[in-house]
Image (tube, rainbow, N blue to C red):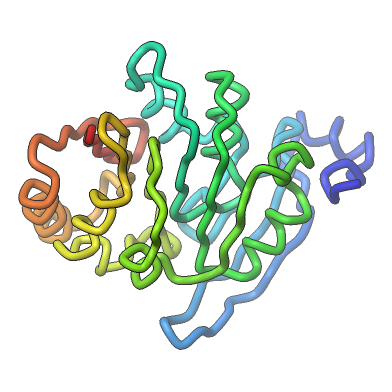
Length: 226
């Protein structure tokens, strides 16, 4: 039984009127930098993982990718998907619950606290077809030997996207992992500094010619088709 199944009926009912704290974790120091404190809540019977400035996951109600995936072509059915910044699996749940898609999943997250929660709270059928990897995606991606029909990049440390995500080498490595006609989605905060966005967009236009951009809620989404 997953930890999600162990949540009491009273907690589930109470979550429709107010957020119910499920667990909290202090900041975590790592060689790559300090990771922010995290809190896991139950909101309207959906698990919501938050940092001080951002929502990391909210099951299928995670607005940025719920809106982004509306742009998938009709009939697009990926067999393998890669999620960088897996969180508690919102992107995977959106694919399944809103689009009826069940690809074999690889989920990468740098935060061991998040990976531990995902292992405990993900629905069992989803967990069984997901390979969870706790590592920094920036050096992992260039070494990955696999290819995917769908890649979703949702890498944040609180509200900040790691600077290496704008490196031309990282973006070209992502391109190599994508199959022909595959889809690459990349999320950034809409309110990030103009210079940071320009740096990313300049690198993306070189590495991923024809990349498209659009806003969903408080996020700027980028879409490229292989």
